[in-house]
Amino acid sequence: MMANTNATVAILDSQDTGLDMLAEMASSAGMAVLPAHDLNELRVFLSRSQIELLVINATNLQVPLAAVFKQLAESLHRADVLVLVDSSDVHTAVTAMALGAKNVLTLPIEPGHFKRYLRHLLARKPDGFICRDIRSQQLLALSERVAKTDVTVLIGGESGAGKEVLAKHIHQASPRSEGEFVAVNCASIPETMLEDMLFGHEKGSFTGAHQRYLGLFEQAQGGTLFLDEVGELPFSLQAKLLRVVQEKELKRLGGTEVIKLDTRIIAATNRNLQKEVLEKRFREDLYYRLNVFPLKLLPLRDRAQDILPIAQFLLQRYRGSMGAAAVNAQFDSAALGFLQSYSWPGNVRELENVVQRALVLAVGGAIGLEHLLVDGGLDDFMEQMPSVGLVKNINSLPTVVEPPMPQELCQAYQATGTDGGYVGPDSQHRGLSEVARDSEQKMIVTTLGRLNGSRKEAALELGISPRTLRYRLAKMKDLGIAIPG
Figure 1 (cartoon, rainbow, N blue to C red):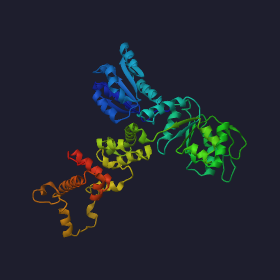
Figure 2: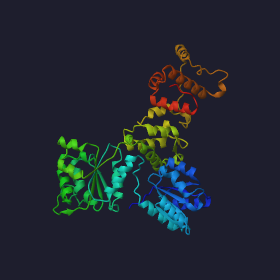
Figure 3: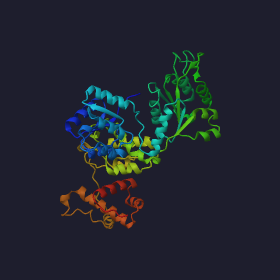
Figure 4: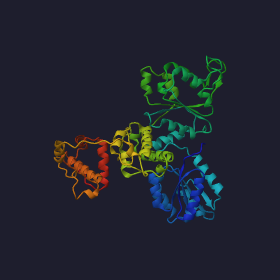
């Protein structure tokens, strides 16, 4: 089984010395550590992060062990629990197992043994497929049952929903986990090249074939071959694939040797293959060979409870590579609300892009609504970005002299009913930017009130995008400003 290299481990220990020691051992084993002194601190961690393992030092608990399991039942999800007990405390060890702990370890602990034990626990847990939605959990449980067999699997679902992640999970949960997971996208490779890549060739079989090449089927011997977007496979190549799948053997291009295969096949498609069969674009016999056990991965919008755990997982994955400012980055409440409510037409792939953009754009570790560019809306972000500090050497830029505002525009501006645009003696000490912000806020409130709270009409009248208006309204709410509608 492959090791879970980016595992996150939470540790509950009320004593600083014990907590520091356990955290140090887990960290040196290559794991991300969330050290908690009490249940409240632990609950905060669990609400923000997806963990694979919770370590509880029962010898230092300030509350009964049963209370810990009861209060954290909904937060732990699929995480395993390891309870540390005193070597003479048989009662607590039995209680821990009865409450649902997967493992119990006795104290004192030798550091090397503890680190090996943690790695052993996490190596048994395939990583990458994160789910909290009940339907996703049912799919995951079914996929793990299928993984124990050697049947061919066909995964359906929209583009970007995570079909390859699910396929890897099946591979890692299977007896073939020590073998290779080899993936190929059938839609991205020309037909002639794809045939060579799948089945291989012998030296001299065509011009430029200077040596024998083992195709992907052979490279996946003892492991799993993942045929992504199999619905895009050229019709002429489908017959050749059918024979290999059916006979579990192949001949390399230009060769005579019959190679016996021991390769599990997982295929995936975002097409309706039954419809493709009816319209004569996909072979019916190949469809039934691939569709031995179908799994359907729902789009992200239909499993909304998965959104935040996946977003937190992606945040942990990428923030370490985005510079020092992003190391402690967290989503604020407005950002979390938006992530949860957005429909994600691009599914997990779009969510991944949004998280990476946010880590680039956020400053100071807080990821706000303004940093979530779901459609690549950099123009909206530029509209919101302050100009101060963007150019290091502003003196090198040419000076632009703006003409005075025409009198008719001044009158039109005053006619809006907002008086914050005037900088008089009482407002000079506040700074121009603050006065301008007050003016903008009054204008937004006035416009919304006049339009009975219609965000769409207000954005149109104010000359800004609906997204920009949502961002500014969120900021105004944080300041306690009442918003009409």
